[in-house]
Length: 205
View 1 (cartoon, helix red, strand yellow):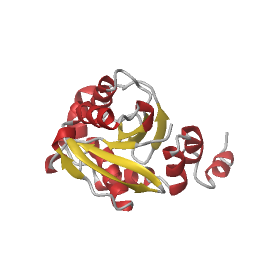
View 2 (view 1 turned 180 degrees about the horizontal axis):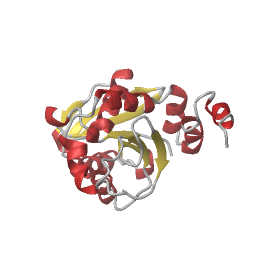
View 3 (view 1 turned 30 degrees about the horizontal axis):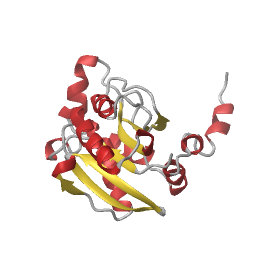
View 4 (view 1 turned 90 degrees about the vertical axis):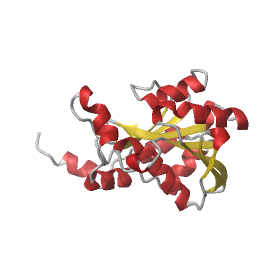
């Protein structure tokens, strides 16, 4: 299915604006700016939403104005109102399994402890078939430090720049994603940069 709704997860307000938990929202805002789409608060959807043309496709963008763990309230409301199927949704969010600079596309799967995904899955009737853009933010090392790591401190500038570069999606990849060609998109997006393979092959065993 083609993508009709793109969601960026994060907590509302300036206190959280530059934290690791908000990289999905930052990515969405960058996408909106790139294609001239204005996001406006709509109370009935519990989020900021915009609609516009992205590479010739009609898309809606959503930043839930709830806290991350209630993201499903906004996603579910928009999906029901516009009759958008889970497979027509792409969610961008912070991924602690990857270091900053690593970003991966994925379709389906569980929430892996991410409360925003958990809320969205529940709101979509436990349908996990939506696409994800997993933006690496690294892991604090201890589970007990996770909340402070994600929401209590600002993401260092160097890590933020790595995350921004790693999550930059080219027009080619974005077009494939929007057309529902996720496997092709992953093949291109996940490919090593030019020269990386040859450099690896020259390493001593």
